Image 1: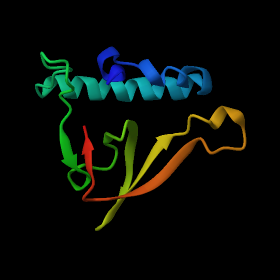
Image 2: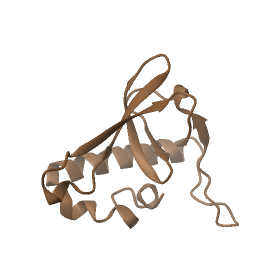
Image 3: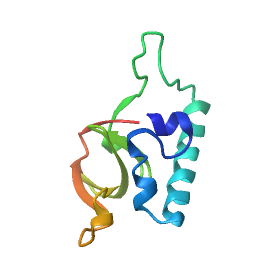
Image 4: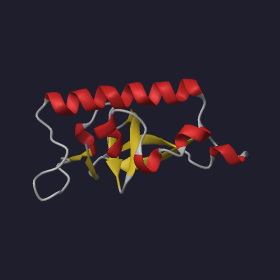
Amino acid sequence: MSCLKAGKIAGKYRALLYILAKEDIDSINSVIRKKRKEYLHFGGGFQNKEGKSCMKAVKLSNLKVGDLFIHKGTMYEVIAKNKWTSQCGCLNDKYCFGGWCKYLYCDFSNYTKVEI
């Protein structure tokens, strides 16, 4: 949520600034800015008066390839979809230690509830 508020990599994701290359940071920031603009355009608010998050929960089956979502505090991108599952990827924060993959991939059931 701090990334959407700031329109760039921020908050607990700030460590990514030291791990990723400049091109990757620019790419991620442009996606975050795009999602922030969409979120605000469609009437989204960052917090209500009680300080609770106003993120909307939807089924993964309602998202399209390329959409970003949050599941259990981690931001993912939908890479591919099929009838029952969606392949999703997220940035690996341990990539800088070497021997690790830059992105982590996993399959989610299309019935999984996620936040957008």
